[in-house]
Length: 414
Image (tube, rainbow, N blue to C red):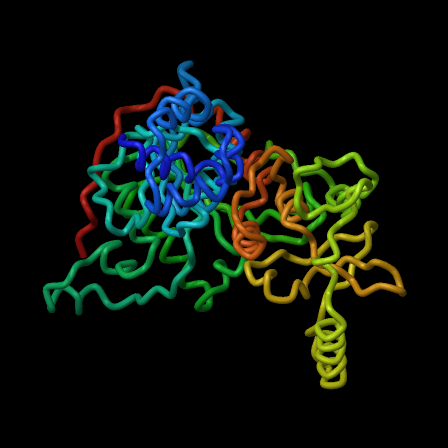
């Protein structure tokens, strides 16, 4: 890579401030290099390679227990869970540039790791072989037309007919081509009831009857592991019938689950000085997360208006003893679904991005290199890491079982 490509690559993984500290220059200078406004001195090339690239290419070289690909990867919640079981990611796809920045800052694969943007533009033959396919694919409406009519018009049939135009089609075409040992798909609980159940029925029909996998589903609430009510449907499939069941999954009792105190900032001076959402010697939460008088009045009036109509719309005010509502990608707008009480004399506040990370089960060393607005969207769209972790733990013994060589299945004729 030339010096500019090297700087671009580094800034995908670190903030300009972090790069500046490592190189002994000003952050503004790094940004000017990135914008091609001035030329870096010759020593910068070696400095980056010596001080930053070793951190960004520290992939473990020990043999992996299994390999996996990470589709619709977001910020890598699924990857974290499967790496903890000894898996190695060999391909990643995520279309959002800001999510890719967060992902790259936390998973240092080096320049050889394939990181695709739009999976719809990647040919399935170009994806590496893998044992497990992971995908938190978005749910889009499925249009199911009569196969006989499609045949009469000379149009595709099978899963191409049922799912073309949806992102599930990309999952299906990759499974059909690469025939992984297993897959894990994650989606909102409402996938099961979408279009009166027909959407999920179509997905399961494709996975079971057309692709030939043994498939099971389970709805799991993140509340077992984190102080948040968050129900998601998990779809697990194996190429061979290996006897996988949900019986052995370890889900702690919901009534004994953690409360918000476990994820809120301690505000006693013990948390890192470089966390910009905290201020002062005691590391109190910055006042910028406290709602303005205008916004707080608006939310209270909005809630009251809907109470009078008998609706349940309104804000969710919580304390350290409570469990939160579901964190959504719209949290950046007003934070209304999870507002932390600060007592009667002060307006409530939003969660900070770090608290959102904790609410989704991410460790405190997970890097957040984007703005608060982007971070709220990313964590609101993420998986609850310990939920996927338990599923990965349940699946992992079956991933090392020797099975028959994969046989590509032809698409079922009408």
